[in-house]
Length: 409
Image (cartoon, rainbow, N blue to C red; front, side, top):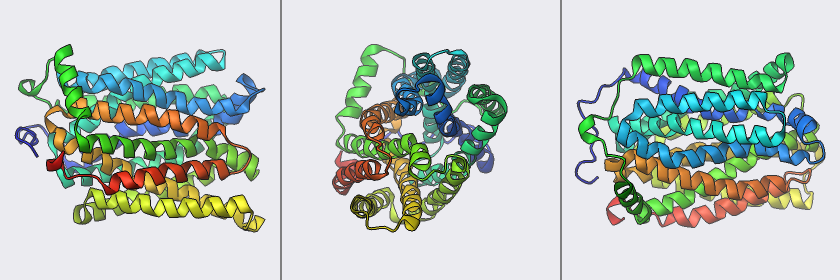
């Protein structure tokens, strides 16, 4: 690490268990906002887009697009103003977007409100990660992020089931007030307990020239550029599956009614990836973890594309093979995205907030561009989805194999 990038030893720290739980709540706003919408997609399609039901998938990717776009600004703002104002301000914008989505009469207006919601969630998403970098670094930081993700995975496990209960009682629009309630609870806890971690002496004034210089430093660093490319492909794989999996369960296997319970199984099993990563990352390092994971998924998805396209599986085994494959994609995300984030931040500790913003924003926005056509290619079978993930991971693997050490960047 370069000089001046060590965590501040005097920065206020919560007890580690509470700190991890609080971070998990901050990150969970994103997962809850995506996964609770999945069981609502058939109703949204029927009410707002009956002639083109695949367009209901955009309820997911519009939120992700807004989140990625907002990420460009939230990091520099958190480096200039501190972590707390950006987190709290972002939550206010998130709640406004949720309220507008609740009232919107057309799909286009719902999607616009979802973009606004995504812009808001970028605040806690980015500033919370920079907050971790303020206090910890290296493999210890990776370990804390892994433990955070371990708790965070409980939200994807229960969000669709909770969403289905809300839909049953209040209709699909009732999900949006639930988003507001969750955000208010998490932010109140944060406001009451977590002190500011970025001292005034370490803040970077929000000047255009300074921002351009920081962005140039980030986007000309060889390691960071390679990490962005790999992260984009990992995100694209994950968002493709998130956008299409409800339709596969519904139209492919006739399991729309039990989808929330199956998704809880998927997320619960995939959550073990964070447990595994926390145990292995300190010993093996981030590079080996992500490279091995991508290599496995290339082989795994390649076999699945061949087996499903050729119809080699008996009908009784098809669903179970798809379920296994979906779990493997979520598992891959748990073993790669957090580690790639840490790899990108390692040489950028002196501009951690801006680095998180640029890396996450570029990777997220580009991943949506890749994920949308993969999701919209849905044809009633999982083959287009599997083929898309195969291509993404086949492109990511050679990138991670060539990742330089931070000192080489």
